[in-house]
Image (cartoon, rainbow, N blue to C red; front, side):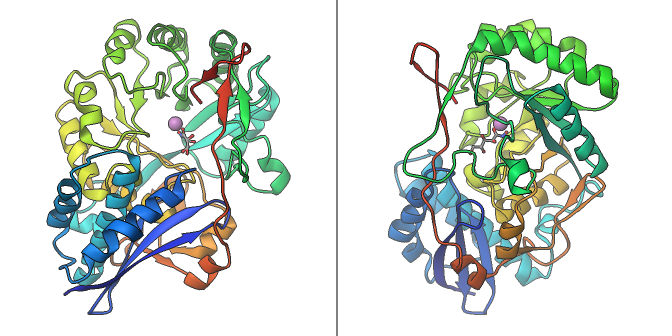
Length: 409
Ligand code: EZ4
Ligand code: CO
């Protein structure tokens, strides 16, 4: 079998997605997700200008060889743009291999280690009553674990609070930045946040009891000692995990955090390779790997980092926001179903429009996700629908402190 075409499709149903479609001389096609939120066209251009022509004529079965070729022959390694581009190729080749074998990809990765993937959903509110309503709504829809984000008095706009979603009839804000030529500016105050978050979890525990697994995302905004303080102050509320407490370029920061708190820690949604996890895993500084197949070079490296993590009882918690396309979500769901050290899968439903562009065998039943048993990844692109939603420029928001200093968002 030989690759005869590799096309990049950019579509924007409720947000932008970049998809690679690889076609073979035997008529099999494969899809890969190359979406890098807010920098989409950089990856599209990396693929169309530098990668697609290298794929023509190659044997699509040689997944590992193609991955190593793209990683090593570029000389310039790593980084989100490069690794999202390589991820798309890797996923598309696994998709083709599954279709050629007549099997879902999880079968090629060793077969299912569980019946389905436990998920968590995103509850949020501008105040406690709104947050409680959101948690109840998620529970009614079957979610068994809940991420809790709420507004903080004194901070006007806040990450993770779906303030506009209600107005549009969807659950989530699919494009938190809004579309446009400039990023939205938000405000941030770490002291106000650190004071407020424990009171929110106390209220949630009082209302929903001790059993419900609760998660929280700090979104990279604290210093190591502030993160340690937050972890400690949340211990009475028994979190499933606390995520992205610091901007984790500095892996050593987790040594300090770990000394101070037994709250389980999750990190890695912006990581691109196993090297970003090297110290964190080897020194057992985290509990969950937050990598996403799309930003981590695809299915092949995700399986490898999880096998490394397994030696240290560290489990998966793959990143599943709506900016990971249905193709990327399917790819990591096949990995999650196959590995022994699966933890939980983040699951934000995609919008109705997105689901018209990406036809999926994935099911979500009673809080559990399953990638389905269609051969390959189980996602097909409706190209006509994709073409009806042209790219729109979009930026993620950014933060400024009260004195005007730019802060991590
Ligand atoms: O802000 O994927 O845990 N989820 C997150 C996400 C990220 C977005 C950025 O594109 O932190 O919502
Ligand atoms: Co996050």
